[in-house]
Length: 212
Image 1 (cartoon, rainbow, N blue to C red):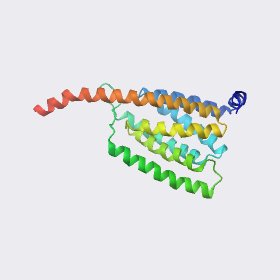
Image 2 (cartoon, rainbow, N blue to C red; image 1 turned 30 degrees about the horizontal axis):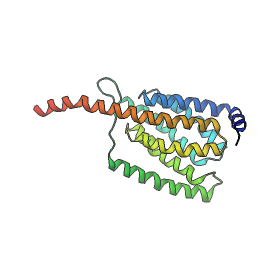
Image 3 (cartoon, helix red, strand yellow; image 1 turned 45 degrees about the horizontal axis):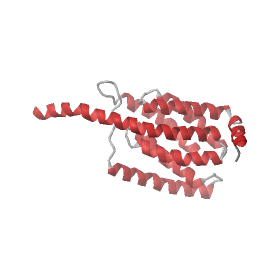
Image 4 (cartoon, helix red, strand yellow; image 1 turned 180 degrees about the vertical axis):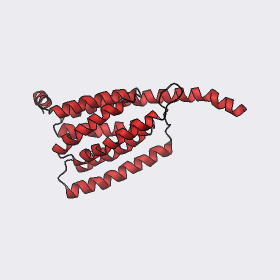
């Protein structure tokens, strides 16, 4: 593919895809900052992408974004009720058991969904698309529950998604996911630092409780 073909494909993208991509960028930017309004932009993004992916026969992705709509409301509610004394989001730490458990869940779900899509639909990139779907659901659940681990799963999703969307000619979406990949790395680091600050802040309080 030449640069001119890429630019032509980018400029020929639908308005819906462009708006969804812009909303997605704002959503992730606000997630990094642990801003609850990220869920509002996320709701706009995922609603529009249901149509974009369905039109391009990425059925696993389309189904995924239907589930995302519900997650946006749940995430908004959960974040509202889990803040510290400074009104910042309380981040849940990651354990080795968490990584093994959720990795196994996402891989098993990806194989099952990939087989179904490959056998019973005309889906493009059935197994790769199923991987991004299953892993995204795990990542989204961890995000709504404020787990630091969510960013590592999003990074894996973004790497695979970039290739899929580029191959399908969804250039604005592919470029968006390149941006997502960078932002997720930043998000992982930002949340990790915030988690460390919360641990340090809780240490004096824990010490005081031990003296009672």
